[in-house]
Structure formats: structure tokens, C-alpha cells
Length: 132
Image (cartoon, rainbow, N blue to C red; front, side, top):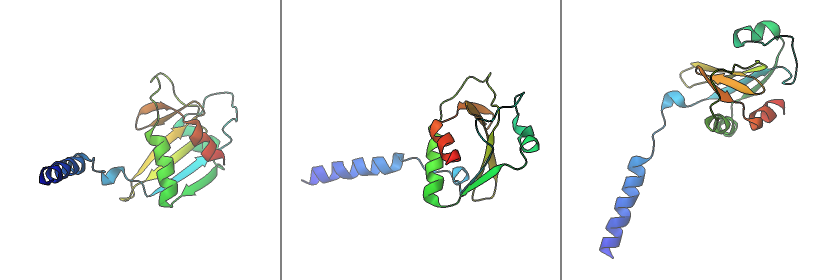
């Protein structure tokens, strides 16, 4: 019986020792969506830096409750990389505000989005959440 207790204790301590620690810089305290109609067509592709120029009156949604922020972050964590040759036709921006008040910006298109200089497939659940 004592051997079984020792084995269980070793397994438990290994589990907790290997558990990844969250980086405080990766935590997000609030999320802001600024967007226009996602299906809205223009004659040319809107780049991230021109989004606010072409859509100054965009709709805004804020998420500040932990459960809401965690739900959105789960969608962002599970994103799949897209070919780097694609750039989004930007129809929205997502601002992730961290506890130290730094802000990360995602530029969202219907098919792909950019985040930290990488291109990802836009999760359809994210688009549904934005339009809700």
C-alpha cells in the first residue's frame, strides 16, 4: 500500500511539474472587435492599415468578462496557419488588451486573418461571434 501511495505521489508531482505555466504577457484582460459587414464588397482589397480610413464608423463589440474573453481566446488558440502569400481583405480588427495595457491587433478578413505577422484561416465560429 505504501508503494502505491509513493507511485501516485510521483505521478501527481510529475503532472504538476510538467504543467505549462501561463505567461502573464499572454493573458488577455479584454477584447474589442471593430468591424463592418463581413460580406461587404469593395472594388479593391482593404489592407489593415487602411481599414479605419475606409470604415471609420465600424460597429464595436467589447468583451471584458473572463468567460467571454476565454471563449474568444480559445477560438484564436485553435487557428490553422494559412499560406503566407494570402493577405486578408480586412473587414474587421480585433484588439487584445493585456494586463500591462499592451494591445495586440488582429486584422480579420472573411477567409484569412493576420496576427503577429502570421496568416491564419479565419475560424468560422469567430465570424459568427462577431456578427452575433
